[in-house]
Amino acid sequence: MLDQEDEGTRIAIWVVVGVLFLVLVGVIGGVVLRHLHGKAAPAAPVSAAAPAAVATVAEEIELIEAPLEGELVATLTFEVGKADLGGDASAAVDAIVAALAAAPARRIVLSGFHDASGDPAFNAELAKQRAIAVREALLAAGAEPARVQLRKPKSTLGGGSDEEARRVEARLVD
Image 1 (spheres, rainbow, N blue to C red):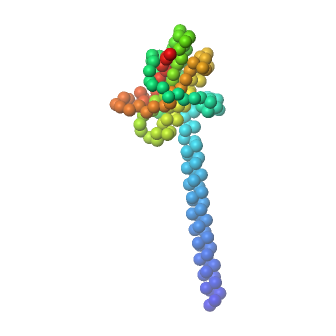
Image 2 (image 1 turned 90 degrees about the vertical axis):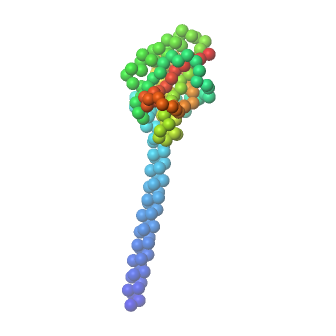
Image 3 (image 1 turned 60 degrees about the horizontal axis):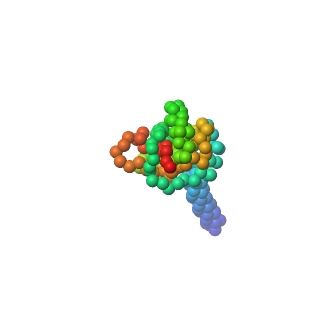
């Protein structure tokens, strides 16, 4: 009789240990997935053409706090959830570079915008990555790095279209 009770106790202990192990694995897995999701989400919009270059530049770029002012030179729009410049962006980039060449004492401020839907932190990072993509295109076209600044991303509020919310504005300022 004593052996049967010992066997039942052993089985109960193994069941408890097994359940605790599964709970522990589930908690650790959830933490790892949450961490990976939090790290991967903002990086997803980075251009596939040069992800390492954009990520490096993102760390070095200072975002300025400035009012939205100056002459609007160009507006570039983006696809949902992406920071890649579209094929029609070259005309806007050329216009910005020409505006800089025509006004050597002025600079361009790039303002990334996003709508109010979804995760605000993800949207702000996406707007920043879009402005960085425009900056990289300007630098590749010959713009001086010191004359191209990025303004902190802003949320587009109001009744504008979704496409309007996914934009970067380039403004010529003193």
